[in-house]
Image 1 (spheres, rainbow, N blue to C red):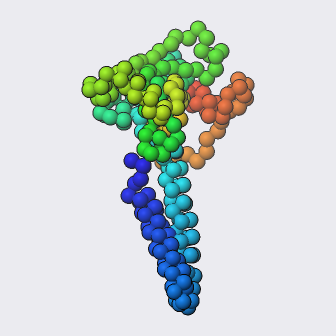
Image 2 (tube, rainbow, N blue to C red):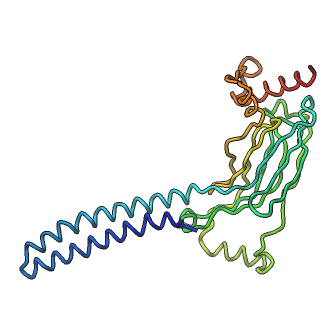
Image 3 (cartoon, one colour):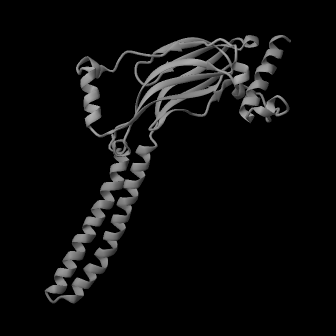
Length: 266
């Protein structure tokens, strides 16, 4: 919905204040026209500021609600990673859907990162403001590598994520839905969108859908949490060759995998 209960208060209360100020101002003008300048001036001087303040607060509340709608995020899935064979960059990825029935799907990926893709339907901004959020259909989860050099010649591992069709498809023919969308003037564009993050043993990520496509929130590294509880205070990131070609987070992930493999063989 466009307005939450708190959002309604931010609009209704200032609007009532503005309306009261306008009525008071007009009554003041009416008193002045009837030859009562004292009472009319007092009402006008009290009503005009109330009307201005109420209108300003109403606009502020409306802008805040508009911003909230245009930056809306909805939870799509939690992605958990568990190492199967770190020396081969093989991981088991569990995808728990959060946008409907709590379905969990398990997929084995080989690589440096996982990627979740979807087919996205973006709506016009004014439709977002009125409460129509971006719609999507998950496509697949697949593997990625830090760069093309590492990816060349490596296998592609992926799993389909396509779930059951929307319930509305049971009652309205698909061709009708496309016709309605095309003639409602609410459609912006259709496109493919993806979110990807490192394959780190013990990490959990949350994938979200924004009004512009898929995104991911801050990952939760269970291993890092355990380290912090054990007293770890610093993390070192190596940026020497060949890590200079990577970002800091990519280098940290590569270091993590190397150290993890060394501990496994210790």
